[in-house]
View 1 (cartoon, rainbow, N blue to C red):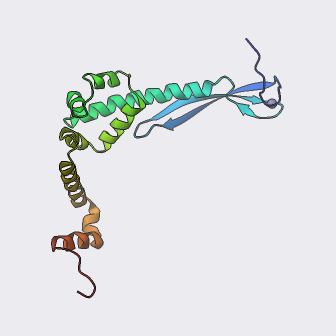
View 2: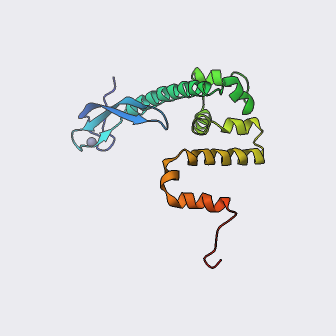
View 3: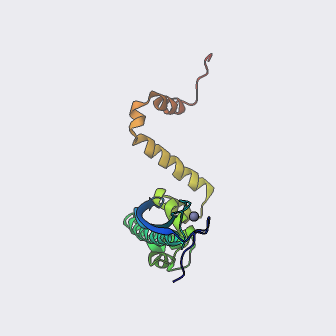
Length: 176
Ligand SMILES: [Zn+2]
């Protein structure tokens, strides 16, 4: 095996260190990976000389993404958003989600799943071909529903005022 050399000072006196680390993918679970680096005993710099940390990170990240994709698709199924429905409304080729679920997905798949996980009703909008009026109505209904279900609606007078004045046909001016 070739002896490792410090890229900074050229010394061959390197000591290998390992450390457990963790990170988290967006909306996903925490994942763990091993950091492997070499510390130069002469200049005291540390390096991921063989790209091991990077490789370990990618592998662990990919595993977390796979888990996220599978879990998200299963969650959507429970909300009556089946794989075939998802494919139909977003005009994806059939069996696309099966492919994703088995690990064959892209960064775009992850982005779309994160969006739909956050706003599942977007599938209704997609089913209506993203028709502007429908999209607006769904959004208004959604906001209304969420505001009513939020504690803030009962506790914050400014929100009450906003909706009360809206129902009475507009805002009142100071002089009016
Ligand atoms: Zn060095």
